[in-house]
Length: 336
Length: 112
Image 1 (tube, chains in turn yellow, purple):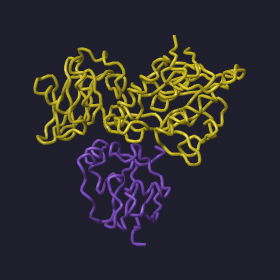
Image 2 (spheres, chains in turn blue, orange; image 1 turned 45 degrees about the horizontal axis):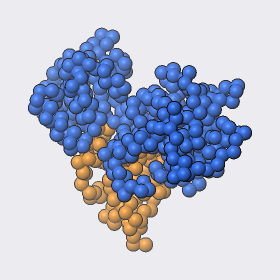
Image 3 (tube, chains in turn green, yellow; image 1 turned 135 degrees about the vertical axis):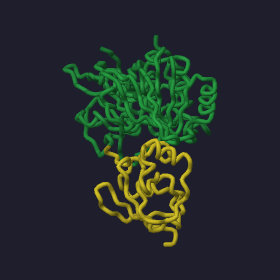
Image 4 (spheres, helix red, strand yellow; image 1 turned 180 degrees about the vertical axis):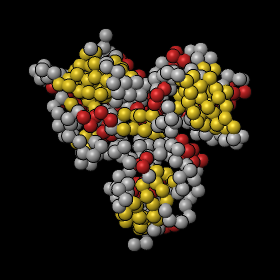
């Protein structure tokens, strides 16, 4: 059992900044996120897009903002459970919460902060018969541990940044990498596209465009994929160990609906005094919450996180008075 | 008023709504739908980086041509081949689209 002061569900910008604000008042945090890397939609959907409304940054790339937030929180040594979806919240007799993920990892804390954004990102799946049969038996939608693919034959499908970036990365790890894309041009960042083309010319990536996977074959584990080339109207069968469709992720509210919180459509109504939900000890901050005048902006999420941790502190240490300290006066005192 | 246009939106339950949108606010159709409190998921907020504002255009208005990124995104979400399929965030609200008729596509469902 992982124990901490605040369990943060969602490692997007708002969850990441909570680590810093909690750390300033000596509260420890542990983040849970269904994605394999922190950053939420900034890392997953638009890492290379500039954001212009983060105070003090006339322009910053979403991916850079995430890197900075991680760095800002580092002194406070947050824990991470990544690539796992928070599935269940139970309240214990000693007034704490136990959050369990879909992989069975358990976390215990007196406070839970839901910073779930738009929900859990779930993979967009191609329509293939047998697809579900091979999930976890050769078909993966997110890459948590690239070492799994060492010396294996891997086919990646997709045309966005994650398909390109993983093809580039796995070119040095896997035995072979085949990148199959339905169109001739890629949607991803230009430098990634160029890199893939270079690796293709060098024979390190087998690049097949205007093509798609039409069939999966094998016994209990995936053994082959059928690749249909649209222009030639021919199919080739390729022996593979892994097929990784990367057609983007779409957020779903998911298990949160079952947690006994009051919900308003797809969001959690909160008290703006401290962003508390209808369950004492559970807070909701960022895009997931709702209140009169709510704006779904990163900068508003930062504010909510800051206010919220004060209330969390009073719940955890009711006997202590909290005095606001300025970082200019106190600095940042890292945890051991 | 001259700078207000009308768009007809059929929601996922099949109900048709008449909505109004100003042309001088730099809005796109997704935002106009949202501003009228009709459900649209619109995850990425209008960057053509998801496909959750997907609509099916039913009228024969001349719309701005699809950008490469819109086309790629629709393709990746497997809805490029659907007739009239567009990302509503990529269609600016302008006088040219007054009377536009569209249906929300399943990908736009916020509850999905």
